[in-house]
Length: 227
Image 1 (cartoon, rainbow, N blue to C red):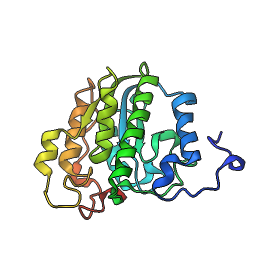
Image 2: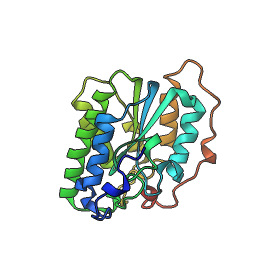
Image 3: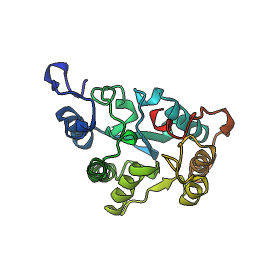
Image 4: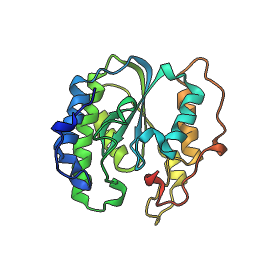
């Protein structure tokens, strides 16, 4: 069943910063936050949305998946993308409008847009966390930048525990001041090692390790968010 039938879709463009208030994006997120029934799993993992859609086909998400599923069985984990898309469970990332919009927050230098994003996204994340309070035993968020700020604000609104990765000390160790994206790519091997270690600490019998050197790497510090 489609979230929004074709006959009911807005004719407004899904390109650019106005997607935050686009009626179809708002409606799709309300569907997730009100009607969608989340699975019961051991671990919830939030990961950033991606330029490439559906998100799960992007190089960045394939990297995350290699690490996640080297530790956890598919039936133990629920992956949820978040960011400019709002909140998008993995099983809905092929749906309209989640697979059809075009806006990259990393390309935007307008502070008012970033502030609005953090305000809106933190509220949506908080609602999802509360809605799924009984669905997961553990919650992990793998994110940097404005996505991390939104997640941190959401966590301040709830008593639920969310492990936010990469660890701050790892971020600072990898930081290159003066670079457009000072903390670089979430495909950084040190960041992925943080994710792997955190997941391994949650399970009694983790699966075989993935070799981090086999993962796809971002070519430049400024192109990682496009993946």
